[in-house]
Length: 62
Length: 146
Image 1 (cartoon, rainbow over the protein chains, first blue to last red):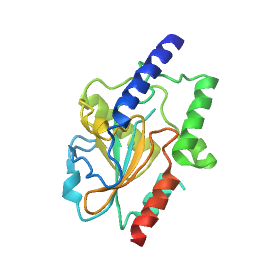
Image 2 (spheres, rainbow over the protein chains, first blue to last red):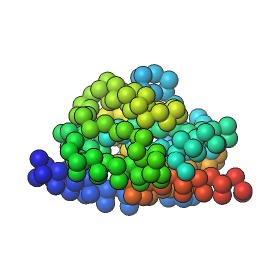
Image 3 (cartoon, rainbow over the protein chains, first blue to last red):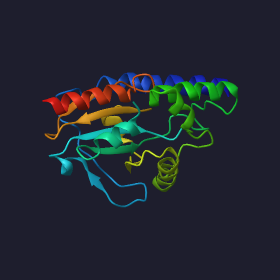
Image 4 (cartoon, one colour):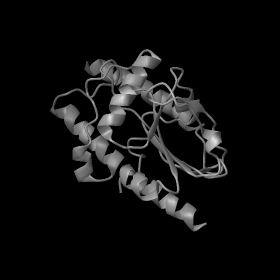
């Protein structure tokens, strides 16, 4: 279990190091996306909300 | 100030979206465990997420989740997350290719503010330690003052 934790932690850190450098910065256009809701329906396209500021909260349950 | 505080304060003027992305600490991944060490680590992470000790104690992230392997499983966990954590804001679910998570380098958690013009007004740091709702609140105030 401890070895798995170390392995996954290193995988996460490698991923973060790679993609954090590419993350959008202040002033950049926000990458557009369209995603469905938690029930599988009600898709939302980010760009369709243009005209109103949006707070984006990324996360999971654990 | 917690994210929920911000939502309640600014929801009339800002859209708030939670994007559920792949699990940070699933049983079959970087699991924190259910023991004392796992509980303590989880509490410390929640402190970073909520910014307040009392709220951190009230937030109960799951410790019994396997990383979803299908979009249906991901939606089920997202619904449970939405109901339990009670952010109240709209939850969207990232696709299984993790494209949105990758585009925003969001894993394990991250905050952004997108202006009405579609440009990033605030790019929060990488969670858990860079996840700072209070900082988002400052960015919102700064945005409103423009």
